[in-house]
Image 1 (tube, rainbow, N blue to C red):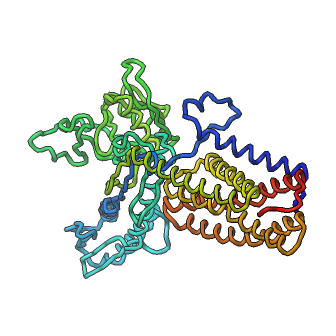
Image 2: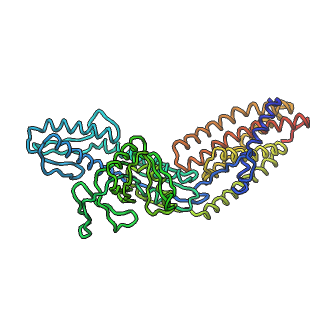
Length: 534
């Protein structure tokens, strides 16, 4: 077991050198790393929120607004269906999330219920997924009809909205180039966001606070706005505020001519004539067809571009736009144009997000945490090195060399995986220091037992490594299982601890069993000691 072929020696040396190269960038600043040759890795370990500072946000998806929107859509569809079927009704209103109305002819109830169930299937297909059972509850009391959404359906659309919100939040943050953000679901309707190194939290809050629902509607030129009655608008139209000036109002038609769901790209740019910042957008095939048809039929009319129920701009259509692309201008700054492009590319949130909690972690706290972690790791490291040399002499020195290599390998693998190092992660590394020499202690004690029984030096060392191997593997496998459970069931900080612990298990087994065995083998073959002082 002490014999190493040349290929094994080369492999062990190559792995060690690669680990050193991977860990090397962590010793230099980003500016110096940019001057490195291309063959030297440039990836560093990412520091978590608690180490380099940043923003912590806890958001809640306003699922109540989704339920309200579904009830409004159902009310609209129900009115349209009753009108289409020629069924007379009265007192149709929404009370406690239920639609209540009376029909004048009670004999039409059975046929009406059938049509409402068909309406239910259509709603299900559009909202979440087609289901065999109805998503509506229909109660009938003579001529009084009560229609409401089922609890299961409301729960389903709520779960769907939260999952969709997480994905859109992730896209928006990724577009800004924020490194290693933590975005995860918390509870049933909350989203936890941690952004290490973020120096402009207000910008993130602004991005996440916008639903970014984009629509294109025609301005109602036949109506005039009455400042004394700002909420009154003609039938089929509505009054919306300007995005740049809340006192300026537009009267636009309620019908959506083109929706933001057909948008496939949006990029910030500059107007070729005025050189002002703008957002250039492009529709998919369906959206381009709609956009071309609308602009062709309404040349000379103002066309309102509406974002979150506010009019960004209302340019006059000069010519038919058939290419499926256009431009949004509204007196933006370059940063505002870039943020709007991010919002449009990421897509509209299904519901508003409410900021429940906001914390900022300063870089000074992170620096103190790093310093405390360094001091703890250094004290533990020195203590272990001194102990091993005092107790096991030259073999202890071999174990110390392996320990140093072990830490380098942990750092190199963390850099390669671009893992985020947090305070619990540092705790995992400190724990690895102790675990790294634990295997050597088992091996050396086994060797001492063999020597006391009268075995030769070579046989004692060989037997010591063989007999300790199963114990080392059993101990590390059980620890690895525990680390895996922590990773899959724990939260962010616990995951950071489990990652460094798991990496440390693999590296410590490699360095403690393989690297030290190689050094011991070279020592015995070169020095040929008659006895070992352990």
